[in-house]
Amino acid sequence: MLFENKFIYYSSIIVSVVIILFIVGMIFKSFFIVKNQFIDIGGLTYVNQVREDDYTLKLAKNLIQGCDTKVCEVQSMLDLVTNIPYKVNKSVARSGKNVINKIMEIVMIKAIF
Image (cartoon, rainbow, N blue to C red; front, top):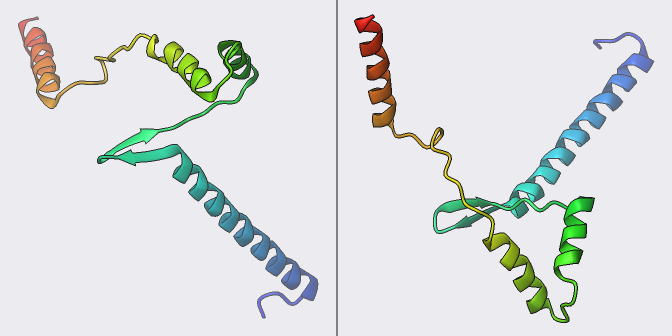
């Protein structure tokens, strides 16, 4: 036996079981988070992140004010979302060719000076 003291031996077993149960619980919980947030459509993965903070709830209630049907509520929220301007982040969306060209420009400038 690794531990001569029975109290330490049994407490280490209890701690080990608690840690294993905690890890299994985290894996189980993360499985459902991933299952509900990541949607695969046609080989592309979409991330669904729904917030329920106070600001979002107030905004949603304000948007659906005066709506009698679920269709009206959804259309009201879609009208807001479709008017959000779309922006392409060009600093992240670079091709390999553009990166190499930029490096070559920097090397040429340093060679001149």
